[in-house]
Structure formats: structure tokens, C-alpha cells
Image (cartoon, rainbow, N blue to C red):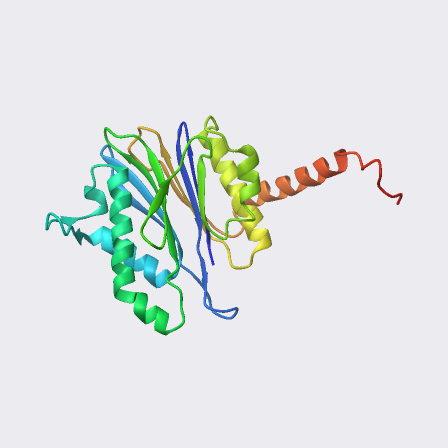
Length: 248
């Protein structure tokens, strides 16, 4: 399993992904699930993936190396796309191509075609965008009313985002809230684990200004986790008991 979260706020994009992949309790590995593309001043794009690792890695390779557009006959790469919408279309097309190649074989093996992507970034002269691409190749766009998207094991990390993330949230606060969402998931699901990869793309910077791996024992992440736990305990103790509760 995995957990990836993307936050699209007024000042830019934050993308965070874990790296744990397992095929059973005794076969746990680390693989990068956050992939970065772009040329400074022209475009900055981040793609996070969840689901079947072989499928997601193949899709990333296809959009990196290029796919033949059936209408024009031209080979298109993620770094050639004129807009984030066209980039989302390209990823969706790659997913459908993989389904054609592997869908029947996976079905025969009793395995689902399970994959999902978060795509975010900006192309010069265009608006910053974030999309979630599903296993069918279709996608939805992130909006101001709910300025974040999640894939993978998202239920544990969603409450903090629902309560706290707004369009006006600063990039630094978006980083912090994304990490708190990840910390909540790490505590509740053993299928999600460190290290974490994080990328930050400020609006109109056309560059990935932060690309960082958070390893086990990272002092900031450890402090964030401990202080959040303490704050939750303090808030719980500060709330008066129900008037119809019991003594003791």
C-alpha cells in the first residue's frame, strides 16, 4: 500500500509520497513514488503514484520516453506538453495503453488493475493545476473549495486536511499540514512507511524549489510528530467532560 498527498494552494503546490512497497509482511521494499520533471523557467511537474508498482513504473517510463499520438503520429513526452491538462491526458492515455497490454494477464492471475496518480505543476504561460488520474485513465481536477488530493491509504490522513487546509494556506503551512497528514497515516497503517519524498513548486516559479527525502529519524519530522501528539492530548484534556458522563 502507499499514501500520497498533493496540496494546491494560492502560493503553490506541495507533493508528498511515502516509499514503502510490500508483497507480504516479510517482503517490504523502498521505491520512489514521487517523480519530478521539468526545465527551470519552462515547466515544473511532479507525479506521485499508488497501486501496482509494475504498472505505475511502466506508465512513468512511457510518459518520460514518449507515446505515439494516434491522431498526429507524433511522439509526445510529459516534458513536451503545452499545458497541465494535456499532461494529464497523456498520463491517462499511458494508463489505458498499459491496461490493453496487461489487463487480461492480470485478470487471469486474479490481480486487479490497480493504479492511481497525482499530477501537479505549471507550464510557462499557463495556470498551475493538479489532477488525480484513475485506473481507467480518466481524471479529475483539484479545486479551491477542497485544495488537496490523495491517493492510496488516504483515510487516516484526511481529517487534518479537511479541517485545516484552505486556498489561502501558505506554502510553509501546506508542507506542515501535509506532513501531519502523513504522520497520522504512518501511525495507523503499517503499509505506509518512511522514507518520505517531498517536492514544492511555488506558483509562477516554474521550478521545483524543494526536493527532499525525509529519512527515519529526521529531526524536524520527529519533532513535528511528537508536538502534534502532545497538542492533541492537551486539547483532549482541555475539553470538559459531557454533563451526562460518569465519575472516575
